[in-house]
Image 1 (spheres, rainbow, N blue to C red):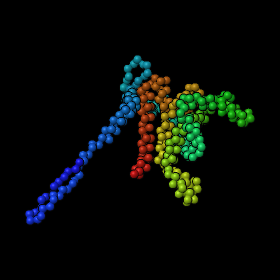
Image 2 (image 1 turned 90 degrees about the vertical axis):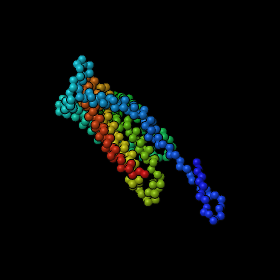
Image 3 (image 1 turned 45 degrees about the vertical axis):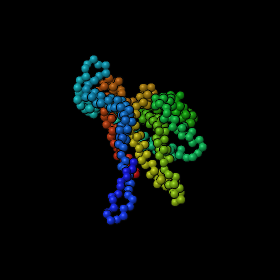
Image 4 (image 1 turned 60 degrees about the vertical axis):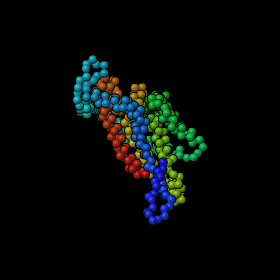
Length: 332
């Protein structure tokens, strides 16, 4: 919209000319910024689901952790205060299994995080090539992620069976020309956790591989071409081009794997109850919480374990945000 203003008349004594007009653009009305409202409306279903299925159950677990609640007991819940937490760390009957579960989770994380991250990076680099049928190979490596963990645990139970019919024992028996006898991979405390680690890495490495592969494909080819012109070796290209290019993605994958390592439950539960897995050597925090609630009927104690587990996950998430934040701050 334009406005037309007439110039002032010429002074007397001078020849009056035609009126001069000046054209000025009218101020356009600035539309209201509704991005925040639109974002809030679009995120409402996700936030509602998060509150309904995560926030409310966790809040109820916090409340139950302050009571002595027994599953199926006719007695009314009795307020315990912080007694459940005190027993969790001081009572030998409760603190022993719980601290052992925390130690098992820590052992699992210390081994799985670097092993799975390194293997995923190697597979991502291997599959980041322009070859025929490369999509088929990517699908094959990603396929174990699609399988449910329960099915994967059943398959590996057959592989690691203690009898001569176990696939691993049978293969070793054949390779050693009959000198290898039956070995209880799941029942032996020295190999029980290693068996769970191998199973978990095999099932989950494809997920991290896809994330790292996406990060590798974001690195410009010009950087590798410049490195080749500078006569950089493959190792120097990997060190000075590849690693800096996927540093943020690599840190994210490592932190995500750390968080997921504290949520190990399915494979442990299936192998303990159906495969003869050593319980003390492989008990995890989630397994301890579930067995405390439904085997011992102690809902209050299981809720306290869940709250402590939640705090551990939150601490790991904060570490992840702090580590990744410098990369995000440098983005323009």
